[in-house]
Structures are given as C-alpha cells and as structure tokens.
Length: 144
Image (cartoon, rainbow, N blue to C red; front, side):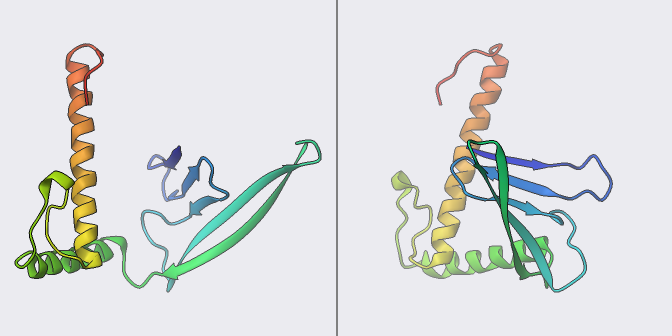
C-alpha cells in the first residue's frame, strides 16, 4: 500500500510525503511543486522504530540531494523527447506485440519506458472507465 499526501490549500506549503507499507523509510520532499532556488533538491528519508516494549519511538534520518538545474516540466519534456526519438528510430526495424503490451518495437531503455508508460496509461483508463460505469449504475460492481 502506498500513501501520498500533497496539499495545495495552504500558500507556499509544498511538502509531499510518501509512505509505503513494508517500506523502511518515509520520503518527504519540501519543494515538491515549485523548486527552491539552488543547485540541489533535497529528499528527506525517515525511518521510525519502536523499542522497549513498543513504548518509545526512535528515528533515523538521512537526506539525499539530487540535481535541481531543471524544473520538473523541463525534465519531463527532455525525457519525453528522448523516448519519442528512440521509439521512432527503433520501431521501424522491430515489430510491436500488442497482445503483450509491447506497443513499439525496440530494446533500448527509452523504448521499454515508453511501452511501460503506455501500459500504465491504458490500465489507468480502464480503471477510470469502470469507475465511471459504476457511478452511472449507482455504485454497482462492474467487471474490470
């Protein structure tokens, strides 16, 4: 189970916390929406444990810094353009396999990522279509 919380209600509060069941750490990004000025983006990882008969909580924290030279949208467009270029280049010589959700032929990491993103998008749309059908039917169960 993965829990994600991010609020747009409070001004300039851009903290995003990601919790995962079974994960040792909670990830917190303090500038998830608009990056702070600087060369690095900081991600805080916190691990909490109970000791002494589960009466005391102890924490372990560490900070990971990643490159912040480009804003998120720029990185997204750069990655998208790399994927499109590789799909265009490699799919001309390799076959797709729609039944196995290989939308474009190719073996590079970029083509593999493009195929994975396309599959995620298709599955998300299937779930959303089922949700809308269930709502239309008054909350009835629908086959996905």
